[in-house]
Length: 216
View 1 (cartoon, one colour):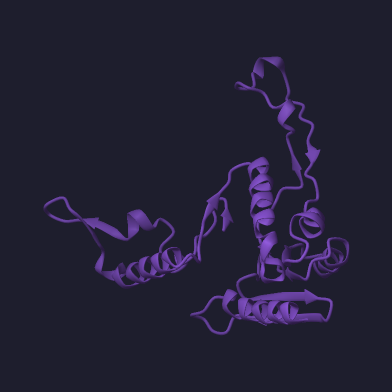
View 2: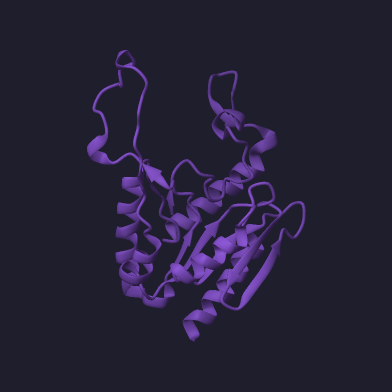
């Protein structure tokens, strides 16, 4: 899992500030889990350790666009050996523009020199590189979000970048409904009930799509 400050696996049911809200000090200055949070904390710890010890979860944090692309390349080229059994779930919202490394200042920008004039460069479109060079046999899923041209952008990603599936989601409704776009059409995915996450039915559908892809 390549991540930058995102919601972590098995932590979705915890409070936003879990460290401060789930624990409390005892009279003898020891730390214990608050009774009201004990079950969700135990479940999160149990599931996390099971995934890590079973070799099912490896979290790799990144900060800059440079780190993201370099680590993504390392992951992709390492997974190349497993061919079609690999899946990329590319949910990170990568900026379209960045400050080139060679133009970055070393120290604080001084206001005495007047207004700041900054020139940004376009972030290279690496999805096609991932598909064609780094891991050409892997199953790739990307995300698009733009209310006005949502499905158009999803169709473009399928064709231009050769994605196998695109999850089209609007920021305002992404926890309730998303649209899975593939060459075979569009499938609406809804949250099953008020106590579940939309990721559950979405992942089930993607696993089915991936299995079909492997066996094709």
